[in-house]
Amino acid sequence: MMDEKMQEALNKQLNAEIYSAYLYLSMSAYFESVNLSGFANWMRVQWQEELAHGLKFYDYVNERGGRVVLQAVEKPPSEWDSPLAVFEHVYEHEQKVTVLINKLVDLAVKARDHATNNFLQWFVSEQVEEEASADEVVQKLKLVGDDPSGLFMIDQELGQRVFVAPAATAEGGTE
Ligand code: FEO
Image 1 (cartoon, rainbow, N blue to C red):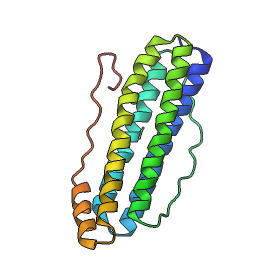
Image 2 (cartoon, protein in one colour):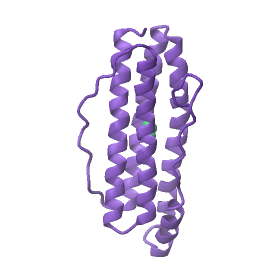
Image 3 (cartoon, rainbow, N blue to C red):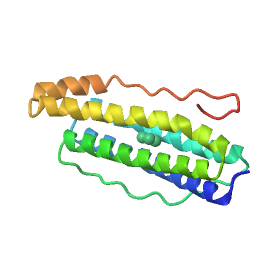
């Protein structure tokens, strides 16, 4: 059984992951509206990843005999000035998520909740990847600048991304 404060914090992170999913789906819709289908695909895969992150929190709280309580999901923005502005937003957002995960780890350590700390380590590694992949696209977009053929090439590349569901663990959760 987890302590009340930890349960509340994990429920809050579940909401934050679902907001991330919603934000990326909104970005996908923006890219669809400007006919950049590869960028839209990348964001759609990211939406699926965030839903999977949210479910990991959902499953974990249940596994620990806690209670999942869903809250309202904030409305995401729907317009950006350019593909670069979108990916700068992604990078900035993921940096904020990293801070949230680190705070959860601090809380688990303080509560001597080793199981939750162990669970959260997957997210600590995941955030390194999340920040790196967003920054990689930011750097590419900066490199091509206003060159339409460069943008087309990045669109082609991002169109290749496919969603890979996290593998199941022995406990029946996701890893
Ligand atoms: Fe759920 Fe993008 O981290």
